[in-house]
Length: 253
Image (cartoon, rainbow, N blue to C red):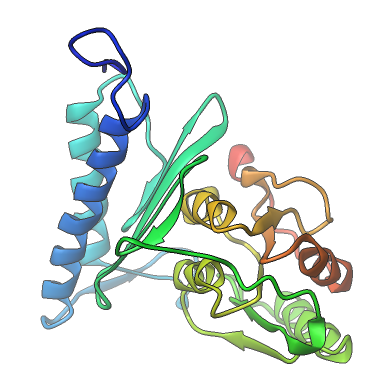
């Protein structure tokens, strides 16, 4: 793949313009498939547990994205899942594209160029007071008693620390987009894979937010754990309240 125009200069949109446009078009195509499938009967199989379901449509969408990317960019790899596409060069995240097909909302973020939803610029809430914060999370795929006990304990810890509310909305990707849009103030999860997080990380950062490890240190995409917030102060407050749930690492599977 060439990163320059016919005259040898970088395209007006930057060196990854072609990759970005490909990701946007793929997200929209995948969304059309999912919207159509929602009105049809679906066969369901399981991944790691009964709570971690994969529909036939998921496989179709993933195959579409992988096949198209391999055809257009045979020498590149894109971390992809469903309609959430992140792109990194030398471990530096360059852009993220997320399409919520049922709401027809296209979220995009490009390093140094801002984050948008359907063309409207996104900004995080900027909240620093935990007592005013809406915190989102997801349960994760494991439902054994020990893991559930830690999950519920973390919610309890945040509420005792004074959080205004802690909610599970059923979609980690949608929750992260709510954070980028400023309709939620923080997010945390253990068990979130790199392919679930890469695109949202760019979008949140470009919307002015912070994405870090639950230890309070820099984000490690492979660690299967994350804290994100509109401000560093809020992210640190959340991280300090959490007990670690160990899901291993994506690069050790």
